[in-house]
Image (cartoon, rainbow, N blue to C red; front, side, top):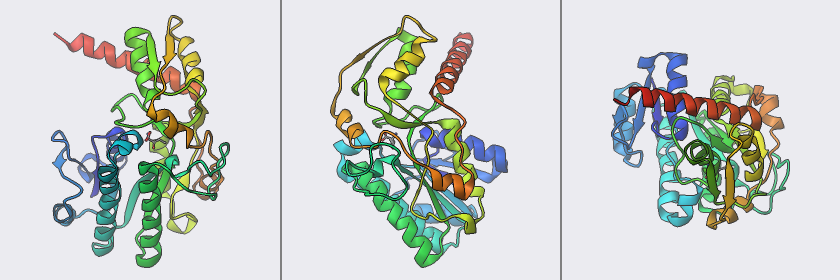
Length: 312
Ligand code: VAH
């Protein structure tokens, strides 16, 4: 069985659906602290997690539970605990129960001001200066350690900002790129918490899910990175995304009120190089900003229509 922890989150919601499509409904357990999950599970309860793994003959774990960058800056202890202790718990269980594979998402947030701003490579100065980035970099070292020392087949991807229309992100710095679509449809206007030129690496969720499944299906001997793989989809600033939305909603207006999240975004690279992922496991993005914007608006309009037609 495959256990997805954080199944109700932005990545988890879509990953559960994809894994069920790939392996069959009864092979995937969707666990989350949220009560709407199939299995209500607090990943910080080590004993409960170990019991769940044993009782359900779990052979793979996808650990997606995390506190993102914006919330992490407001709650350092909580972010460190959730992001790192959960991983240590899963890696310990993976070793003891001899799980086949583990997936754990890292982030381009591991790069700090010392890394190249453009085309940031896989190997460079990695000095995160946000709680979230520090926790993700520490987690990457633990993944590599458990692979080298205990042979745990744990795999990881440094996701850019993820954009999706199903579950909203919570507490991230790149959340503006999701919220802007909802506001564009509702009010034809959006106030952005980043400056108009703040360019960030982004990825459309269908690409992120495909990358995860592709990495996890690759034979272990082909993988040369056991910290976490850079992958790139697109890079854009709020003004670029606003222009793309205006093509579909001409009356759309954007204004800018930068807050503390702007400094977080400034510390990250604007674009990423992903040669190693392309070489080792054939990574290739399918969505650019125009394609993503078109699909986001189409999907959100479809969902809105469905909801309106069902609301009695
Ligand atoms: C965040 N969405 O904003 C996450 C992501 C690169 C950003 O890690 O914190």
